[in-house]
Amino acid sequence: MFKLMWGITGTGYVLQESIDLMKELQDNFNIDLTVILSKEGSAVVKWYKKWLALTEAVKKVKVEKTPNIPFYAGPLQIGNYDLFIACPVSANSVAKIVYGIADTLITNCVAQAIKGGQIVYVFPSDQDTEPIVTSRPDGSPLILKIRDVEIENIKRLNQMEGIVVIKKFEDIRKLILQKVKEKS
Image (cartoon, rainbow, N blue to C red; front, top):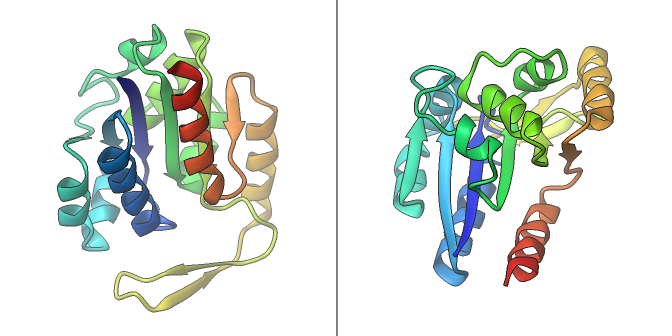
């Protein structure tokens, strides 16, 4: 069985799309999916009223208590998972990753996976130079301007060893299915 770890940080960008994809992957493919959330990821999922949707779609959902609890950094580091995707990743988490700050469950798992020679796939919410359209918790549109500091951090993220930045959300499904096919 293909083991997929999916990390969510504190941004509502593509949150429903992520949950829909997770459900499809579990329902239609032989994928053992574990979702881990940073504390802020959990707060945002609940603020957007998506907690029930997430926990109904995914069997294993774990929320950060500390950067090492629940303990996934070690299993990721030694390759116990076939794929680690972090999506969506907030600008704050991107900044922490590029500056080596591993003080949340997701940023610690990213750091430890890379130290163990694993590749980490990251889909940042704030990676376009043009404003992005996301949604408010009530579903209405929200336009966000991406700051220069966030664009600089995306450039740094793209240059990091062990990180692959996913440019378009649609590419995540293709990536996962390609990796599943490679393993089978």
